[in-house]
Image (cartoon, rainbow, N blue to C red; front, top):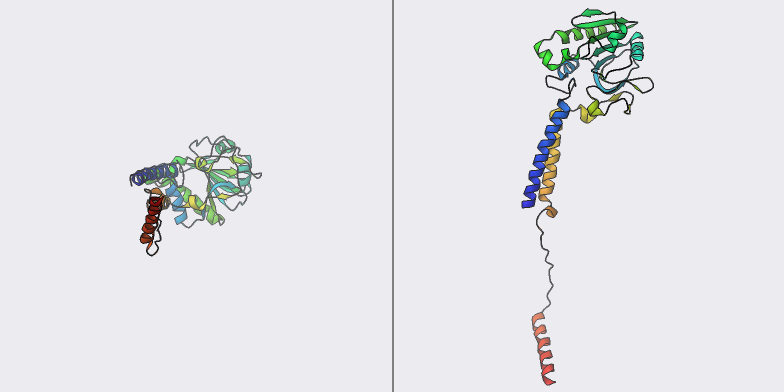
Length: 272
C-alpha cells in the first residue's frame, strides 16, 4: 500500500506539471490565435469566425488561389517578398501584421502607400496589401480600443463586396511554389517545428488535437491520467505479494493408511 501511495503522489505531481506546461505552451505564445491572454490574438481571430468568414488557421500556407485573403501574422524576418508581391499583383489580398511596422519588408519594397486608421494600404496590380503593427490586434489592445480591429474588419467587408472571398488564411509561414519557405517560423514556429530548415507541406492545416480548445485538452489529459491511476491502483502486480496456496487432494482413510505403513516399518526393524 505504501508503494501505491507513493506512486499516486508522484503521478498527481506529474499531472500538475503537465497541465501547467500545457497552459504555458498553448496559451503563452505571443500573437498566437490560441492565446487568450493579453499578448494573444484569439479575440480578433474568433471575431472573424463569428462574423461568418471562412477563417482557416494553417501552420504553413502555399499561395495559389488569388480569391483567398492571407493574414500573415508576425513572420520571421528577413524574408523574400518578390513572389509574395507577385501573388498580390495577380489579385491576391494580403494583411501583413508585424511588430516591425512601418519598416516591414513589404513597406520597404512598395514604399508608396496610403495611411489609414494606423495602417498602410498599398494598391499593387490587381490586389491590395495592408500592413500594420501586430500589437494593435492583440487581446489586450482590443479590450482597450476596438478601432484597429474595426479597421481591418471594414477592409475585409470592402474586399468581400468588391469580390467574394473564398477563405481567410491565418498563418505565419508562406511557402514558395517549390515548397521552400518565403517566411519560416514566427508565432507558431516553436510548437510546429517551423524554421528555414524544416520540412514543409502544401497547405498544412492545424491538426485535430491542435485545433481543440485548451480546456478540452486539459480535461482529456486529466481523464487519461485518471484512467492510468485506476489501472495502477487495482493492478495486483503493483500491490503486496499474494501467496498462492495450492489445494491438496485427500484420499479416504489416508491418515489410517499412513499410520499403518509407519507401524509396519517399526515392527520390521524390531524383528531384525
